[in-house]
Image 1 (cartoon, rainbow, N blue to C red):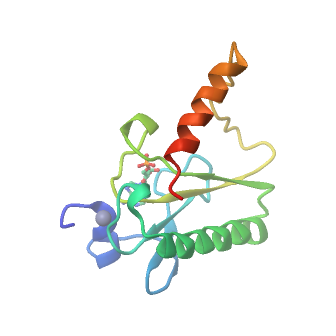
Image 2: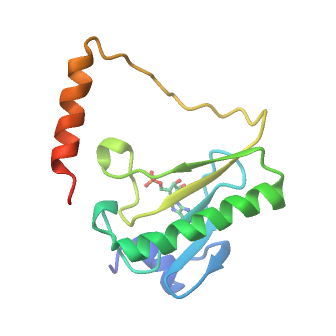
Length: 139
Ligand code: AMP
Ligand code: ZN
């Protein structure tokens, strides 16, 4: 993908602060951290959306996500880590090359998610939605 900024980073046409790379996965610092130390983990090959990433590659990406999370804990003294993956415009995705945010969290880092827990008025509503998801699961 010639115009994709993450593909440009993979090709070395744009700079990045690299944390880790292997044959198929790259991890680097996010230039707009929501908490300082925020990292991104991407497949080197252009894949998007997440639902199209080959499962074997996804396993490799998640292995690196875990390694970065451990390094944020051990190297930065993070008290916790959030993993975030925006998939689609409605989910806030801005770069259209699948990526995982690995965000170190500290007791008083000042960040809070706008987490708006809702309620199902009727249990049947939840059951109906669950039925649709179950019905669409590949066997
Ligand atoms: P998303 O909204 O999940 O698509 O997030 C895209 C992320 O990419 C944002 O957190 C940006 O700060 C980050 N980003 C964009 N351009 C660069 C870049 N050149 N180097 C590092 N991170 C970047
Ligand atoms: Zn790309």
